[in-house]
Length: 137
Image (cartoon, rainbow, N blue to C red; front, side, top):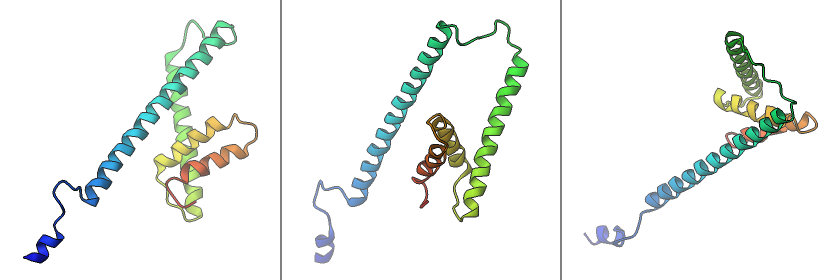
């Protein structure tokens, strides 16, 4: 019995597992909050850009929109974007990296946003840096 008493934790002390779990929960909550504010900021910035372009008459929005063609265009754009992500995944598989398709599509979206930074190297570097969090690339 004395051995069991020696191994018991003092009253009120959290085990290492409990401490790690609570720290992980707080960390993920912080990341979710940061993601929310980042997404909100990006949407606000895009709204301001569109408003500026519309107010300065540089953005033309037709009065009549053929919603069938619009929907078809958006659908084809999404399919093309997913195909781009799938080709990136196949390329990574070719060098021995196994990355989920969702991550590859996200990396492609991230890279497309970075495409507007001068030079195509930033687009490719962005993909690699984004996926570096999930693999040993």
